[in-house]
Length: 213
Image (cartoon, rainbow, N blue to C red):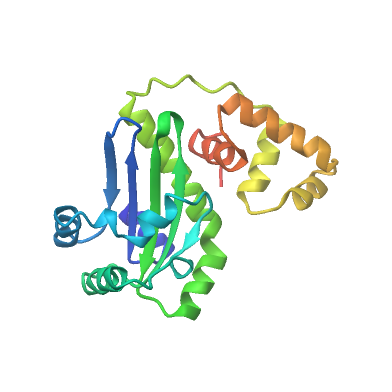
């Protein structure tokens, strides 16, 4: 986590997962004092990041959340004082059996600096969120998940181009195939990898060593 945090150039990374049965798993770089206070005060009940992302499915910049309430403003003030930073970007991840996870990057950047970061690193953050969630589930389940089927060369090609940030039209044009054919390869790879969507398939392909970046 520390290595990846430094590669991204942010102050903190947090991954926290709660299974449908309430089992929790987390890894983070926040100061211990802040983590202890957060848990002791039950701040998850009022944290706009947690509460906002529970109702969202897409990555969310903290600026798009509701910080207007007095409790929210006081909470943010404490978080900033603890070194969390006032800028943040969170990715909600939903898994089987009601599992919910949240991957967050945060920092003490200006609005302009943070906008550049999100523009340039959103794909990396999204892939990291799904990769960490997959690994966490494997750890919790004792690596009991079924081994993915072997991908074909063309399936690896399409996932690689998506992992590099191309959209479907650009990737299909690069491979000189139609978008319909491209989508067919993506769907075939997704099924083989046991992924819930395209982003999840890319993350699984990267973590499984099928796609090398």
